[in-house]
Length: 420
Ligand code: DP6
Image 1 (cartoon, rainbow, N blue to C red):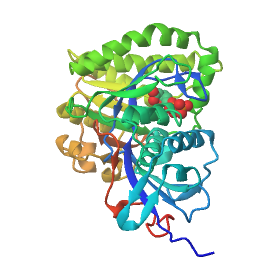
Image 2: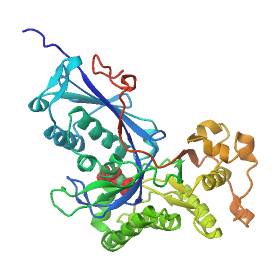
Image 3: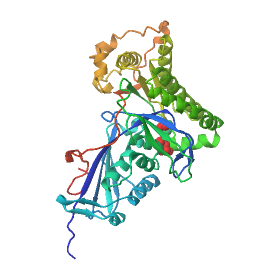
Image 4: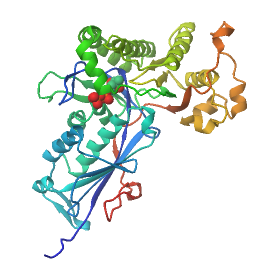
């Protein structure tokens, strides 16, 4: 038999992660991943936190394969399979004349794909890597297979990979509408406002050191649905009202309302975790310390300066109203949580380093000479906690998924379809 002339078609895409300010916690359908309430998130700038994924198809591939951060992982996981199946179902004809590629709609069922994914932040840091990862998988495969669906329809596919992933299909401020249908057809994410709408906001993430292995979101929320009466009350009574107020706050760039709602919602989510049997603890002492620093500061001002929110882990996501406030926030954080003895500032504050300059901090000497914040009158509450934060990331609201057309950014070799 003559060898078939082989080719490889590649698509590379980049997808952001997101942080919910009205939390998703609890499913009404575990397989389709349908939530018990709406949620709302801010997409984070992919320059600082994102997943890049290259997907490839070739008649020479014998099975679907995937590599994450360079290591091969199994695709025999329901959530991956559900996304792959839903995308293949919607695939269309593809033709790339110059490469001699011609794929008919019906061929997709028998063709195999290779997928390589890379996070530009440590997967172990607990920074919602699954949201960016699953969103990127769906977005890049949709481009590879020439799907005609819009972002909202793609978000409904990503939802079946991981709930929070559906919100990473858009930039800016994003609402996941829970929907009512049993088949999930009305449960998808839509953009509330794009990233340019409110570009004063600055986001500082404190990656908190933790030795504890956390309960996964998936099993944590299952236990909360089964045992927490507070979660039921939250989903039915609290979140519907908060969603309306949060959308309003975002549309009007009303920071005080935004901050009050975000902090209250994060605290209530963690209260539902505590109300779960057995109770789940995601925040630790460092998280609590950060909350109290921000609360004291906000109370000392006439109006809130910073919002905080915590997902299923101890990391703090702090949202400052503007750049000036962000530099004051960074000063406070570095005052309380200076880098450990052997750390250097450059690897302690990552992302947008211009906030460090705004804060007038060039080196460790500047960190050491930071003064106690004015809202603290009692010298005893000025204890420092070196080593409790692993590092900080400065970022901002960012754009949604994009295709990277420069082949040098591909993670798979265009000749072999194997990792570079
Ligand atoms: C606390 O999306 O990780 O971050 O749908 O089971 O994959 P699965 O869960 P996941 O849960 C995220 C929960 C959260 C809140 C949020 O992002 O809204």
